[in-house]
Image (tube, rainbow, N blue to C red; front, top):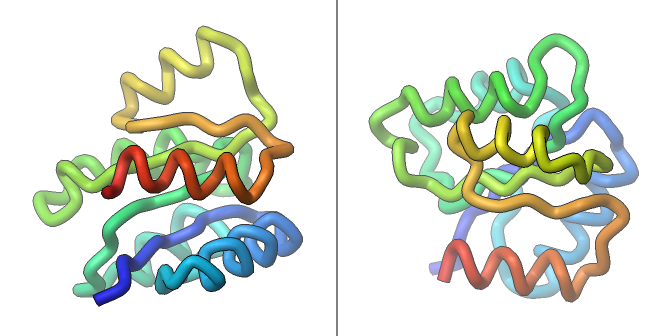
Length: 121
């Protein structure tokens, strides 16, 4: 059974690139445009990994990670943050919020797949 990955990003271009990369490697993809949309789409879904932007309107990626971590069903589900941020303080904030990994944009499809395979074998 293919793994299901939810990608959360307010950029349609990033969502499309991530979806294309994941589909060719046989992952199921659920897209969300922001944090509230992601939470609304969880509704009993089995998610094996979350890929989230940090800088989004309404709810940033750190807030979303904290909300995901507060749900028993997703307490240990990997969360990888996709962001243009590379500052160590931001990475520490992400880790404190519950993020498992961090990918700086722009990234290559190979880098994305390598990180996913490492945190969600």
